[in-house]
Image 1 (cartoon, one colour):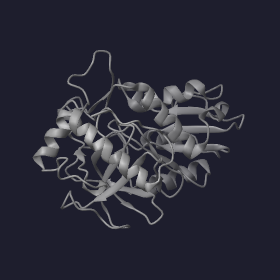
Image 2 (image 1 turned 30 degrees about the vertical axis):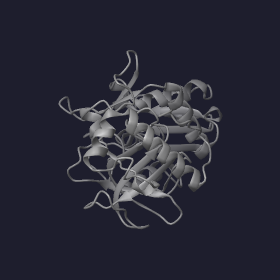
Image 3 (image 1 turned 60 degrees about the vertical axis):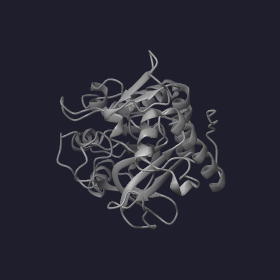
Image 4 (image 1 turned 60 degrees about the horizontal axis):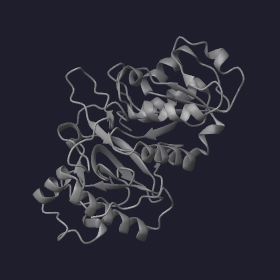
Length: 323
């Protein structure tokens, strides 16, 4: 089957559903692991006739198999790996055959939520991710910073924050949660004209806190009305952003569905907590239908919240907090 064309544009529900079905057929035909899983659960093309029937691949397959639409992974493929929390943690691998597709996705995802990244000075407080190789988050931040305003860079807790924020420039401060909390303890002052965005993650450095508690601590320290959040992971090539109250909004080429925790093939009504399934068209060359280990719920306006994680799910680098 010919590879579908993906465009990072607004889709009507009908257009989205139609393209999702085309992607299912393409990935069933070209992704051996996805095909084997679909066959095992009897979700072959003869059984999948409508959007609602498309099966979602458990995210754990990215740890145990090469989830890619190719007979083998070509040499020099861009490979992202999850951070892991210990040396013995098995890390997910996402083989990105088309890096330009990822770049277009994250640039347009950001633009949908915040406007052009070139309008911001970007400061990144991501010590744990910088310690890891092959981080999709670092790749994204690198690319955004390369075109952002002068002064964009990675920062540490040892930097002179009074000098960093002296000019009151339009700034995005993006950080892993534990590092932002460390900063909040050391540097309590109003951060005007600054978006503070947490990517989740305590990395075993701090006691796990509920998201509302984390946001309250950060808002109090930096005298801001809202703390923003990014929802992304190694296994996805698109991001959702929350500007207020932990309500995430997807770009038009990404959708979230909430499955029942006791029945992975049934779905929850609006407002009820279940497990998060993600459709990501940017995952064209891997798998666009991912059953995550996150718990959440969809609201009536289409936004979604991340509530926590399954008890059996391994602690991940991003979005670890219970809400």
